[in-house]
Image 1 (cartoon, one colour):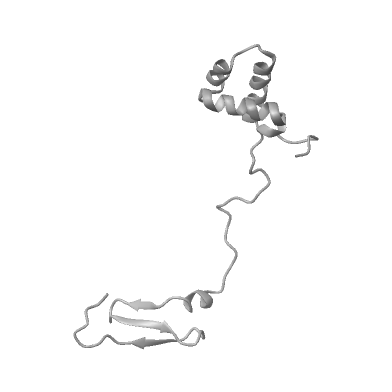
Image 2: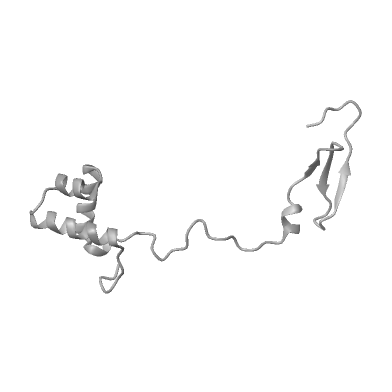
Length: 116
């Protein structure tokens, strides 16, 4: 990753300040964990990452990528309807796609057959 200019959140900056103090030997890893309110094990991982990659390694790794909760791309409802059979609970009929044209043909239950 480029070591040039990058943005840091306030939390990432606080981590950097504390880990720099650990690097200089001013505080212990346990003291850093207490100050950051994280586990000792996580403080060790952060320290290792900071020593290996510098301040840029403390920034959120997903920064700049689209989130998982982004709106989905629009789709054609007719394409989705053509994929799945539709069950009519009132009549008990199973409607299946007919040739992918968005039209459905019904299949009646046989006499004596229980609804699904």
